[in-house]
Length: 469
Ligand code: GLU
Image 1 (cartoon, rainbow, N blue to C red):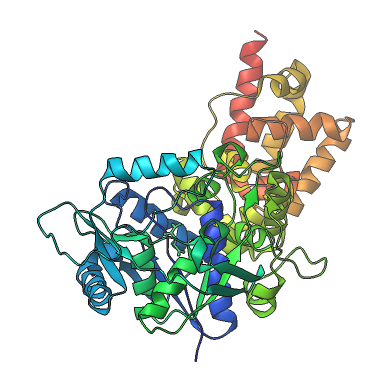
Image 2 (cartoon, rainbow, N blue to C red; image 1 turned 30 degrees about the vertical axis):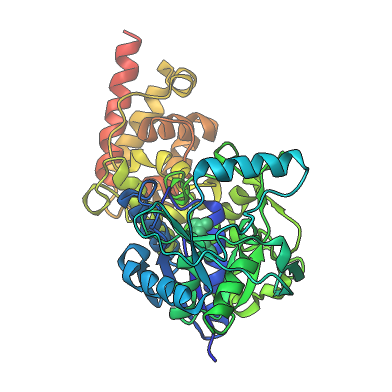
């Protein structure tokens, strides 16, 4: 049977790092086995689910390019099917109506706590044959009383739970709506899921789900419960540690490839290898190599990886993502300045994120309003007028605007005026970029182009004159 996995988020928030890792591992396992990957939106909690969250999840999946072969399926569109299954369980005697009131259940709980027992439903309504339809009632699954559930977890190994540890869980609420454990089981069964890959916060649900699947005569999927992700202080990963929306990483200038690479290493390894292309991930990934222990989120490492990806990826790909950042800054890259691919090549060594890259590249596209104060103070003394004017004159006479030739002019100007190179190149840099930091002068000038360079040289000369008059 071919492998089928799923990612089944509840749309009660954005797609965060933990969810994205679950999605990735599930996706990888399907791809590795030439199987298929299903996206299922578990939106039955009507109070907490929002369309905004659905959109955020879909946006996150699209940005990470984790494509799904089926779905997105929405559980809210499958209520009839859940009802049918609940009825089937009732008819088979595998489920029953429970009329116990909240107060009764609360009293039971308190008694059990006082007796130092594990709180659990005592099965009072189990043998109640009455169908008192008009009363408030829930439907419970009749969990087997004897025997045990054995899970051969692909990550955690064998997990054995005695049935007597499990009570009869509610599968339909008083308003008839199905609960999480029921909907998951019906969907995993109907969708033919062969491998359930999910966070280990669900491990306690698994024996219950297996018992329901057995009652339905369904084939059992394999399970793989992924260990938690911790923050660098050892606490469960939270917003504080950067467990923010995946889209926040886009906003902060990360490449999706870098984030995926980071996520794949959270709990999985292949020797000492740190960098994995998507193809390599698919080829090498296996659930059996996922660590049992929790993994720790490390922002520094993610940043390092991002820089590696910015430096070593196809510049066209980096440019595609950079364009989004430039647009955010109101820049129309098609008309305002150099080709983004060239910009990427010029800036990638010095930019750990695309935010850094775009912030440090604005002057290529639009005029800056003021000079960096320190840089201007240092480089715009009266003595700078002469070399700047000489450069302006020389550049004016250049036919072909070409980096190396322009660099040669800078060298010659320094020589002719008997100045150190820095006394020429640095004022030039501040004049055309507004700051003392830019790629090498030849690259900077050729990216800027003739028009901007000449205009800005003139502006700088006037600025120095005015300031000193
Ligand atoms: N909807 C559940 C969640 O968001 C996941 C259910 C599952 O993977 O079985 O945590």
